[in-house]
Image (cartoon, rainbow, N blue to C red; front, top):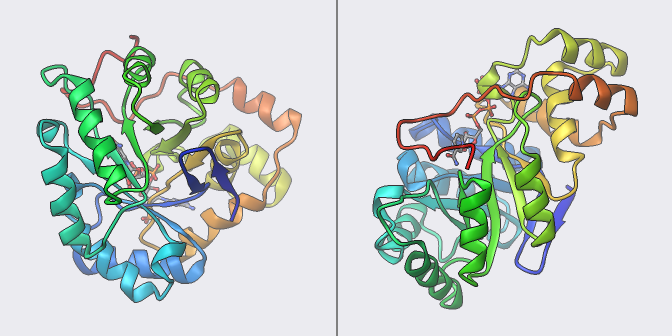
Length: 270
Ligand SMILES: NC(=O)c1ccc[n+]([C@@H]2O[C@H](COP(=O)([O-])OP(=O)(O)OC[C@H]3O[C@@H](n4cnc5c(N)ncnc54)[C@H](OP(=O)(O)O)[C@@H]3O)[C@@H](O)[C@H]2O)c1
């Protein structure tokens, strides 16, 4: 499993997304992913599945220290990230998570004190690293400027949504960029351009979409799959190397298709 290594974290490049799985389905998917070779699991307090994720981690039989676990504090709870993380750890039945993220920015809550509290949680060993999600370039710069040890920004990123400004900031500041909805919520599976590249390599369109992401410096991806066969296919995408012709075909795809855009999302252009 290739990893992203920065001063703040060692993150496996491919992880399992767990939203919107819950209960038994979620626990089974996490256990199966770990058995297959995944070492990175993504959850959040908002997903209402942390108990199941914890169960899946125990069932997967991989030593805790070999699994990279991310959870997130919901944007309405940013005034008390300490309380949120303590509750998440209880539900997960873990002593620490590897990465603790602000799930969405909240303009009504000052960022610096939230990040300062999260840095204290890192010092206390309740999380190994801290970071943000859904931060635009402006917000990410603001977060970095607080001096908090931000390790990652998790954002929607796939072959049909560009993130060049964020990638530049992440690389300049040694941050990982984690791509969520890397398969466009499953909406990219039938794209003809991806299918042509896939046919050339004897793989599938989703594998091409994932290979494009994880082949980029500092980028990890967290596809969700409840099916062991799709989990295996997604893991196998790590071995696929795209060539210049493939990358040019992907570069020519539209780069403005956003699948996740709730009412509380920031102004993405900022
Ligand atoms: N930070 C945030 O605000 C945020 C927002 C959205 C998502 N996320 C995280 O990112 C994770 C992934 O994003 P997502 O769930 O929105 O979308 P996604 O991973 O892009 O797509 C998931 C869909 O693709 C299907 N799929 C997976 N592998 C496949 C394959 N090899 N071939 C064909 N279909 C395949 C899955 O179906 P099966 O299950 O049937 O395989 C599922 O329907 C989430 O689970 C969550 O952990 C974070």
